[in-house]
Image (cartoon, rainbow, N blue to C red; front, side):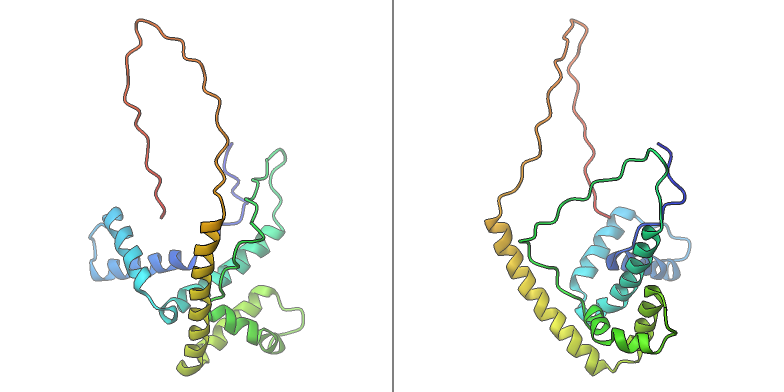
Length: 200
């Protein structure tokens, strides 16, 4: 089935914005030099793991704004007739809730304040943009307070997830029925080559 050009662009994660930023830095520092994608992806992953909560805030802010943009566009999007909707994986209500980032905590605490500075009936995206502007003006000390709370929440979440995974049995995928193969004298054994999955 052909791709629907009217479908909203998928949302970008904080890590996705970080990778884009790293690409731009690499291009400026090494003009004309092509990127070895495998090595570059590995290096980005290592850098991201060592980044503090404070260092990630810039990218998380962009991701939060893009998430709002995506949800707004998807709310008014109608897929072409005859298109099957993709079934979303059901979330386990017993699974630990993901921890909020420093910027998200700030946004929750200042959402009404941001709304008050905008015209009545302002869109969610406008509020998110205003919160982003307000975040830039926040002192380093206040940002550190939000980052500290976020870090503590993350540590609790990681511990809760370990316990959850240890006590939750993994669902085995449904078994596929094997098709009977009709053998012939001309059949020759062949190597089964499969592509490895990669997370980018």
